[in-house]
Amino acid sequence: MRILVIGGTWFLGKSIAEQALARGWDVSTFNRGRSGADVEGVQPIHGDRTVREDLERLAGHGPWDAVVDTSSSDFAPRDVLLSTTALRPAARRWVHISTVSVYEGWPHQPLTDDSALLQCPPDSDESYGYTGEDGSPTTYGFQKAGGERAVTEAFGNAAVFLRPGVILGQGEYVGRLPWWLNRAARGGRIVAPAPAGQRIQPVDVRDVAAFALDQAAASTSGGFNVTHPEGITFGEFLGACLEVADSTGRPVWVAPEVLEEQGVKQWTELPLWRTHAGVWSVDSSRAVAAGLRCRPVLETVRDTWAWLARDGRPVDHPRWAEHGIAEEKEAKVLASL
Image 1 (tube, rainbow, N blue to C red):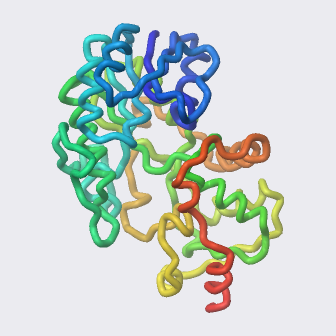
Image 2 (cartoon, one colour):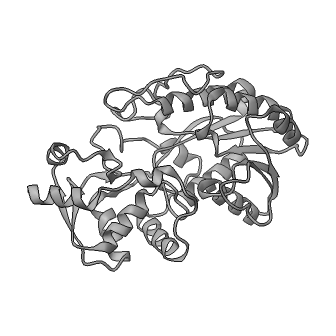
C-alpha cells in the first residue's frame, strides 16, 4: 500500500504516518516543514498546497493508492479544490479528515451520517460563511463543508469523509485534555460542569488514525461520524484525570445556569462542556460497522498524562491559550456558590 499524508508531522497526521509505517506501507508526507519534524521512515516532500507548481511537483512523486488529508482545516475550499484537482491523476482514493461542524444541525440536534450538511461552494475563498449569534453554525463549519464538496468534485465515489467531534490524546495541540489534567494536578476545589452524569464522546487520536488507514485501504465512500460509541460520563472523565495525576483535588459540580451567570464560556473555559442538545449525541454506528474501534477514554487520559510528563505539548498553537478558566475566575465562581 502506497499512501500520501498531507500534513503528517503532528497529532493526527503524525499518528497516521507512524501507524502506516507500522503496517509496512510506503508513506510520503507533504507539508511546509514548519510545524514539526517529519516522521522517521517517511518520504518527506515539502511545499505549499496553495501553490499549483508545488502540487504539480508533488504529483510527480505518485502514484498513490490513497491520499489522507489531515491539514484542510487551515485552508479555504478553493485551496482544497486546487489540491484534489492537481492530485487526482496521481491518486486512486482520497480520505478527508473533516468535522461534525459541517452539519446544519450541529450542535443543536442529534446527528447521523445522513444529517443535512451546510452549503458552501467548492471554489469559495476563506470569507464564505458566518458564525451565528449563539455560536452555530460557524464559518469553520461552512468552510469544511465546502472542502468536502471540493473533494467530491475531483474524486466522486472514491472519496471518504471522516467527521470527528473531539479528538484527544498524545500530541494534542488544542489543549482540552491537557488543561483538565493540569488542573487536576493542581488540586483544591475544582469547578466542574454539572451534571456529572452527562456523557461525552471524545475519541482517541490513535483510533481515528487507525480508522483513516482502514478506509484508505477499503472501497467505501461517503461520510462517517467518528465519535466514541459508548463515551464516558463527565464525572468518570474528571475522576480519571484526578486519578492519573495522583491528585487530592475535589470536583464541585456547578449547575449550567450558575456557570452562565458567572460568564463562564462553554467549550473553552471549561473544555468539553457544552449544553446544546446534540453536541454529544452523534451516531457513529456506520463507522463502527466499517471497523472503527475506540479504546476506553480512561486509557486516553492515562496515556496523555504520561505524554505530558514526558514531552509536553507538541507545537505552539494559538488554540492552546483559549482553553481553561483563569484561577481568579474559578475562585469567583466557587465563592458565588
